[in-house]
Amino acid sequence: MKLRSITFVVLLGLWTAFTLAGSVWAVLFLLGPNSITRLDVVRSDNTILELVLVFLCGGGLWGLGISRLMNADIKSMVKVCAVSWTATVLAFVIVVVFLGNSFGGFSRINILPYFRHSIHYNFLSIFVPAIGIITAINAYVVTGKLGYHELKKVAGLYAGIAAALGFLTVGLILLYSLGWEVGKPVYGKYGMLLLLLICSAGAALAGGMALGWALDKSRIRLDG
Image: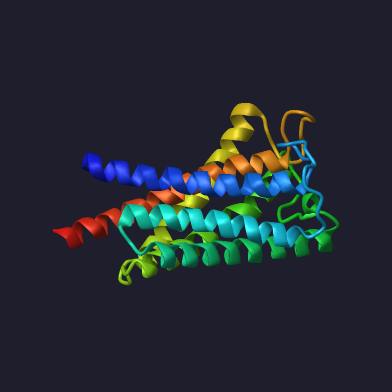
């Protein structure tokens, strides 16, 4: 793999991680006191509106970076990435909130029977496939918008699998290397929201690099 290709793949992965992690952090910052910011700067009861606005901006920035890396039309790429990213994230959040309300709280959603670290594994069981699906849909949409219609299914599949594995890997590393797990937060140190932010960054990095690898291969083939 040539240095130019490696640089492209790494840049797309880092940009994806930066925009996604930045969006998640911004939402948590606006929501008020939590394990990340502990600040209540903006008081608002319209959480959904905040989420939509933040992820529209995050998705737009992601599209801006992709359009510059791929020499694509900036306006159309920014629009499609902003809408796709926001729609998929919003749909997932609505489902999670609905399930959380149905079970009396997110921590009580028991997909797995109780065992040691079961709450953390429930967290991973919910978010790993969701992150994979969200990433696959966005990679599919972006690849098609760039004109690589024959590649969009493969790119979506690779990016989705990579993102899911990235989220899972980071979640397991946090558990078995640092002892950080959902269900046993240490006040002033970490909680589920911080773990979600870190795992999401890992998933975005892996998914972005997988998408970059697929796009780079097609770009080289077309240029050749």
